[in-house]
Structure formats: C-alpha cells, structure tokens
Image (tube, rainbow, N blue to C red; front, side, top):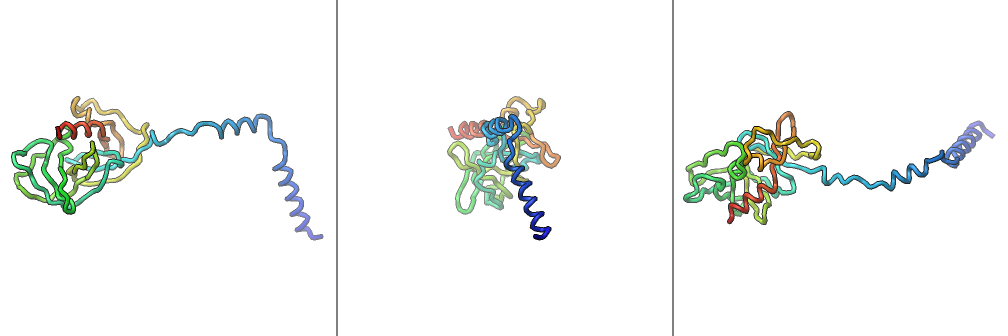
Length: 196
C-alpha cells in the first residue's frame, strides 16, 4: 500500500469525523433562529433616482417616473403664455408633449424667462409619467442614475422658502454635489393643479 492512499484514507476519516460530530450546545437553535428571522425589506429603503441639472442646480427624480430622455427637440411656444410653468409644446419624434419648467412648477430655484421665439430647439427634455399624463421637463443635462438609501437622505435646508421646501423631499450627496431629490407628490399635485 502506498503512502498516498494511506494519507487519503486518513484525510477522509478526519473529514468524516469533523462532519459527523455532535454540534456544540445551542448551535442548532442559533442557526434556526437566524434562518427563520424576517428579511429586511430593502425595496422601501433603496430607490433609484435620475440625477440631472436644471438652471445650474443638481436635482433628482425617482427613476420609475422616467419614460425617456430626448435631445434636440423642436419647441413651440403657446400664444399668450409668455411666463409661468407651461413652456409650450415639444415635438418628440413626431409626438407633441406638454413641456413644463420644473423650477416654475415647483417654485424651486430660479425659473428662466421664456424665449420670445415661436420655435426653438430644446437641448434635452425628460419625458416623465405623472398624474396620468406624460409630460416633458426641460433640463440642461442628464448626470446619472444613482441608488439612494433612505438613511442617506438629508433634510431640506432651512434656507428654502416654504413653497420651495414642499417641492423637495430631501438632499443627497452625489460626486461632491448637493442634489435636491424632488417630491413626487408635490410634482403630481402641481401638474394636476395646472391641468384644472
């Protein structure tokens, strides 16, 4: 008999003794409790957000609202609508969508004045599904889609007015930028109010 086969039998015997030994006291009860414990629901604490820039500020919306990001869309102003949340209509691949100024809609930041040109090209729009409407939001740039845990969300700064604070759910940090996570309910309410 060779030394190799004797060593293999000894190893097999040692492994057999290790796996078939009696467990220490409390071992089975501890693992039964661990496996039977409820699993934390991370869906409530984790969400994806689309981070974008508008009026030079970083903002975010829940990613599930996003339908599409469109670029270089012909934009048409509406008569007698020179100011306010409604910017006009934007043509996205042959479909006209109502386009809003996000800042004017939620009263956050500084809403840019609307151009007097009847037709111009919008660099980027977010098409989002809100309150049974697909609307376009004019933005400057799309930055990223990020995962955000609930515990990472900071409170709204006290420097915002009451109207502005209602439009912001909280603040997150992304690439050394403060990002305002917009309040989906406030946005839905603003859209509903506008369409009344």
